[in-house]
Image 1 (tube, one colour):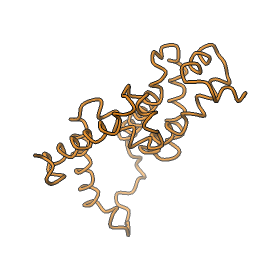
Image 2: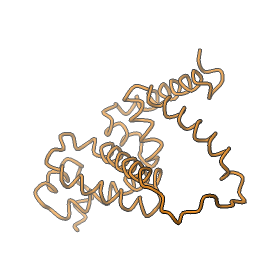
Image 3: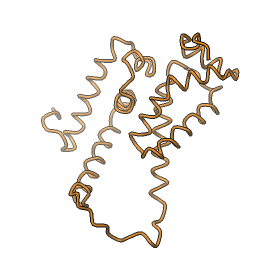
Image 4: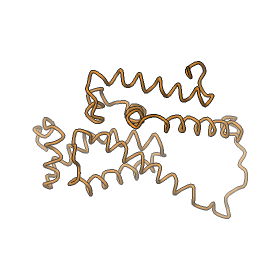
Length: 193
């Protein structure tokens, strides 16, 4: 691949990749593979994350001709990877356990015992409900910050259509609203006001 591809902006790369330019596709993968991988690993085991990553790239290849705003590609890839990971996890929950699966396995680690796991599960459900109550823009921004922390504010701004100088203040308002939502649900003190 020519070094000139590393200097192209995303719109040019997407255009060239649409025209079946392998080097442009390789550069897109090089740039955004870390984002896809981090989101996948945030939800799945390493083996499943490989499947999620692969499916995310296949989905992009299938829909590349429909990408309208290439500057938001990082956000689209992160969202696609998250949805694929959640789909994979949901499909696994519906699989029946085999007859040979042991009823109880002795675990010497208290953090793996049912009570702490149940409490974490309840806490996590409340956290996700609070997150779901946020405006979509906050969900997208905080999701990218959580699952793709390597993105710069400039990249976040491009992915979300937010001016660079306002990414930090929007982040602050979103975190404040999340704390307020958590306080309403009893997970965080003093922020409900």
